[in-house]
Image 1 (tube, rainbow, N blue to C red):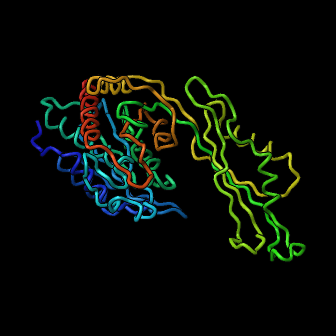
Image 2: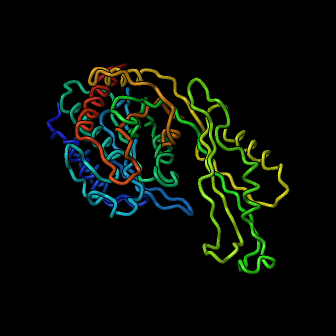
Image 3: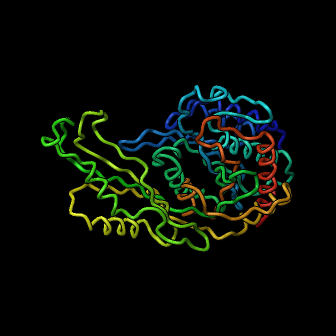
Length: 386
């Protein structure tokens, strides 16, 4: 039995939040996490990956125990920018505790969940008299960014070493309003697009000397399939496509732009593949005879993981501790689960996400403590299974 010090998940959340790890900067977040895990007896590896035209990313893999079952926790310490700090109640990287909440960028997405799993793992290690199986952490600093030098390359590294887990919990903030509402077992795919039309820049007072690309772009967009593209499936909400911005190179009241660009995103279910959706878009835009440039960027395919032993273990832990029956869902955006599902069964479950990516991001202290208990019960159950 280990005699290592117990980890307070609230204090660890604060330490992590106080590292301003806006993608791609680490700002010491992985050092904080590595120190905590080494104190629990984890073997830690810092994995730095780089690729051309992308930021170099520091990642952390940590492992305790040997053999199967191997339960991994996957997550990220990078966070999105804070916007205008003047709109926050407190400095976004102070990790202020006030009125039973902890506030700061990354509290819900997802430093609070990381701290909860570290605390739960430490408690299990300290309490177990007959160690069995493996607990590991797959932590990247690249999830909110291009997602090129993070989880994908860590999994490739693990595969070469024969260290792929048998099961994985991804600690994304899956609950819309209340802890225990939702376990995610899949995600819709994501496709980005950009349409550009070129014209001739000129003065508004002399339109005959210019060629305005905006009306042409608006006509092209009328052919773009938008809104709901299907009725959904038993497991997924409808596929939708939304234009999210229109930009020009002018940005002045009296200048006709020389270029206009529209960007859009589609979240698609299993009625489409990334390829079939791209084909639908291209076919629809063939209806116009206007010259334009179209670029499509597939961010991830839709996927569904049928609930099995891990999903049911987590569901039972939530019901035991909170007295609620969570639903299995595929709602929301993308996450690194889209990479992990190719290697092992997984679920996504973390904190309440109603303030993630927004000003005054915060989570309830009780939710972090309850999540720690849920993770502990799941670890205990999973590591006793053959």
